Length: 171
Ligand SMILES: Cc1cc2nc3c(=O)[nH]c(=O)nc-3n(C[C@H](O)[C@H](O)[C@H](O)COP(=O)(O)O)c2cc1C
Image (cartoon, rainbow, N blue to C red; front, side, top):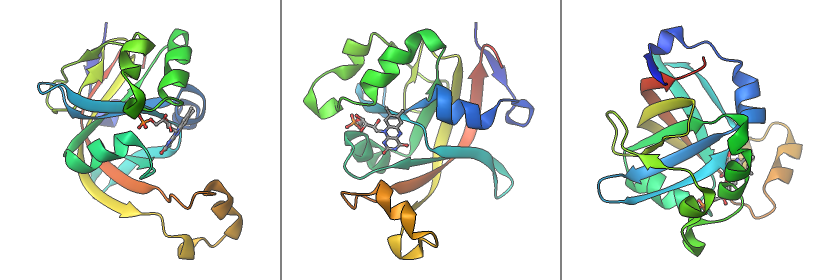
């Protein structure tokens, strides 16, 4: 059973969460059934402008990018290990090619305050309002080896989401 947590009280192994557990970033409108999701493992959680925030990065080549651009919210959901295969699927197939969410077996649900849906199976849900974006600029790579991450030159768009609500079951 998930409970609401005050963002200031969230205590997680943050790098383990990103690198090993991963998140689904989901953006769109649940009521209109117009949304997409994908797996992400790069980003951060912290404080900016005195607000709890999450930083997520989305390549413009992703179908999800169309939604993170169009809508003013997104959610970040993390899951128990038994859903690993679902996250692998959602991180390798594109929503452009069919209903990968149905194929994953995960259940989109209405979020508490943002339009973007969350997932019923999640053990951590961050409901976020987009407050800032920027683009990764290759000319700013102080370490040139970072460019190896971009063979297609599809440099990420960075989104800051102010965390408005957190629901968690085991944190
Ligand atoms: C573990 C893992 C982490 C990923 N992290 C990111 C990420 O941080 N940013 C990104 O743009 N793509 C990331 N991806 C790739 C997208 O999840 C993948 O391209 C997905 O199929 C895009 O789906 P879409 O076209 O429906 O948006 C990751 C994939 C996996 C498996």
